[in-house]
Length: 99
Image 1 (cartoon, rainbow, N blue to C red):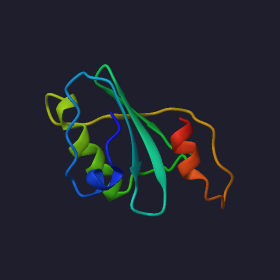
Image 2: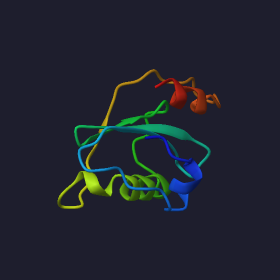
Image 3: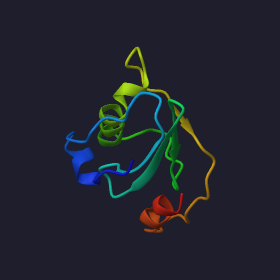
Image 4: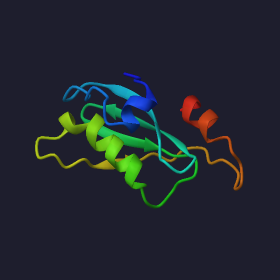
C-alpha cells in the first residue's frame, strides 16, 4: 500500500509482498512525481510526462519497494498510457494522485 515517499527515497520502505497488489507515489529525484501500481506481480508506471528513461533515484526506489515481485530480482515495468500534463506545467503531483 501507500508508504511515505520519504521512506522510499531513503530505501527504508517495506517491500511489497510477492504477488500482492499495491500502489505507490514516488519521487524521481528531479522535481517530478509518478505513480507505480503493482497488480498480480506486474508493475505499471503512470507518468504524466511520459519520460523515456527512469531516473536513478526512481529506479532504486522501485527496485527496493518491489524487490519481492520477481523471483530473479529483475523488475520489469510496463508503462500505462495516461493523461499527459502540459509542457512546462508543475502539476505532476496532482496527476500522480489522480491515477
